[in-house]
Amino acid sequence: MKSLFVLLASLSLLACSNQSINDYQSTAPELDVKTFFNGPLEAKGIVLDRTGTVTRRFTVEMIGSWEENQGKLEEWFVFDDGEKSERTWIINKLQDGRYTGRAGDIVGEAQGESAGFALHWDYQLDLLVDGSSYQVTFDDWLYQIDQQVVINRSYIKKWGFTVGEVILVISKETRQ
Image 1 (spheres, rainbow, N blue to C red):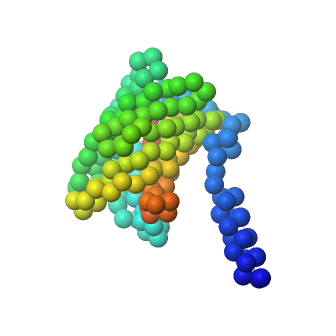
Image 2 (cartoon, rainbow, N blue to C red):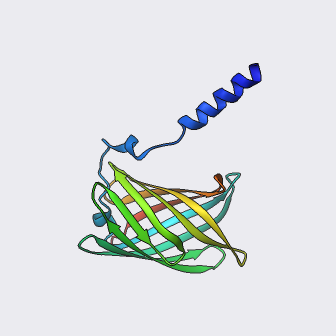
Image 3 (cartoon, one colour):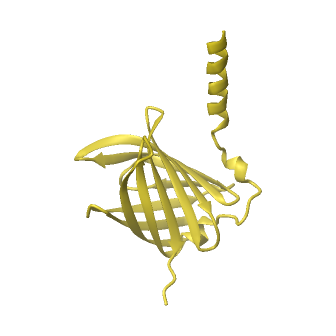
């Protein structure tokens, strides 16, 4: 009986740890995706494995542009081992803080929703690892700190289990 109680208590704690976009409804500054992801941006990040060990570091140069409610975000990645890659997102702003997005390595369509200073994306990604492709789920959270900085935390999942994480600090580029 005691072990059943411990199991149920543990499961209830896991259930309580899932954040919801509604948790950020009344927070500020409000993340305006069209404003923040417009123009040049730069980012620095790390990739962690399932144990929390940093396995890679990287930088990203980005340029965002918008026409009406459709945005284009071009990204150029450089990893600490010299690997380079690119991704171009096409993002559509819908009503009620919702977004959709597509990119070459995204399977189907990314679904996003914003509230307050946060944006949450869910999408499937074809992830290349040592020459092999794996389809993983990204549970992607962005938090606007101020008008110049957004922190991005992505949980990488396979079969419902977190197998890695990406943490990225994105800054508006200030050209002199």
